[in-house]
Image 1 (cartoon, rainbow, N blue to C red):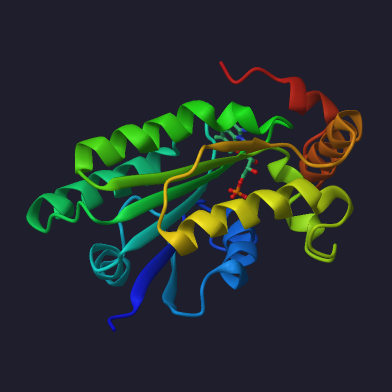
Image 2: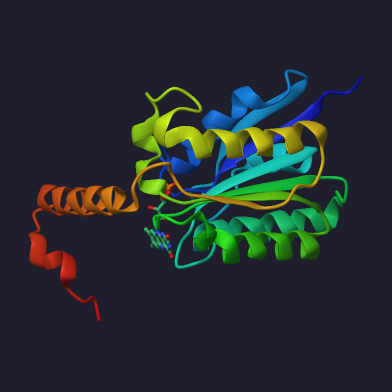
Length: 215
Ligand SMILES: Cc1cc2nc3c(=O)[nH]c(=O)nc-3n(C[C@H](O)[C@H](O)[C@H](O)COP(=O)(O)O)c2cc1C
């Protein structure tokens, strides 16, 4: 029997240490052993040749990306455009697309418009929509790597990834899921503000610079 090919694609512009990549890393062990899984980075304005080849030959694509201004990051939009052009030459209506969108806000439903954009892209590119997962609290995903699966602040992440993996493994369509971390919202906000102050200091800026208007 021909193995089912799955492409996991991280659409964060960060090549390393992205929440998008971490979510795919957590999803991968939940996928069926019968799948042939490959991992790709869409962190530039064009799809690397090898990734494009993998994409067009895939049965399943899992696209994980950060929410930018309530939408799809512009470099990734360009990649999706290239993929759409390729799909016109090599139609794949049987290919199923799953999307994981993580965002800086605490509430995962902030990702709803971006998930709708991916659904529209599926319609235009004539591929099959599978399921969307909107993940809030993206800023803390990296820091949870040491937390056991399904425990403490990771509970909702783990359950949502289990549900998504179920639909990927069975090739079925699922209801979109929107989650926030199992962590107090205020604690997340305080942590984010501390992080921004630390980052501004590391880059030779001060607290006031964080409030500066760019235009
Ligand atoms: C240019 C830019 C725009 C962003 N816009 C939003 C937004 O509209 N809503 C939101 O919740 N987070 C927004 N964020 C935060 C990212 O979605 C968040 O930091 C995410 O966890 C980054 O994921 P990554 O590590 O996979 O790149 C934005 C970040 C950047 C750099």
